[in-house]
Image 1 (cartoon, rainbow, N blue to C red):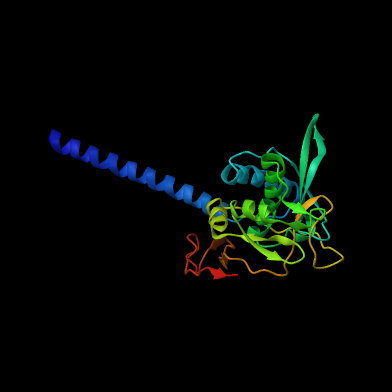
Image 2: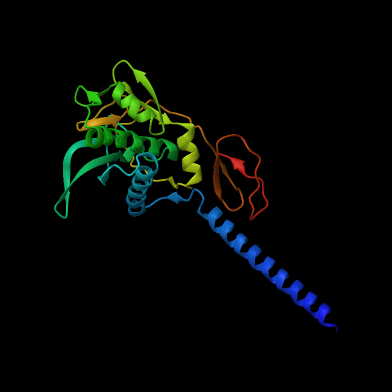
Length: 251
């Protein structure tokens, strides 16, 4: 064997080994990313931690990290999806904290609407603690144009009602894209409220994300009938599960 032939063979083996290594790494990463896509939360311990992580992530990406960490609670809110308490309702190791509550009976909605509720309350907190402006009246029930401007600047679509003002908020396309990009988990945990569907808004604290009946999401949910992997898309798509090579089904 000549020296030139030997070097050629060694180079070819090295290239093949490198390609296999890269391929294995790519397969491992994409499988891990796919498996983590739209996992479902079914335990209260995970839910509390997830809401805190969501607050931190939203605070960084939408509020430039300007909000202080509140205590996030999960309690019944008979007339709203959530509320913000505009005073230091909690003390954590001697430090005062505001409170954001997400209604326990409203959690099992499409995830973009739960996140929109969280951002709604974060907008109240932003008006209160950063801008120091009044964004509601009538004990936090009526949402004024200041709230509308803040909410629209932070990923929400805002519409008005005569009774509650600019209180009805929905996720914008920008927010839905952000949720998809960050693989936010679905919540499949909900308190069964005895008083049924909420029909009015506001809260005893300050500002409440008010319900607007049943709302269809702007994103589409697809699942694999074989392995139950879940993905979301912002439009109708034809997609195959990479593990099962099975067509995914909408719904």
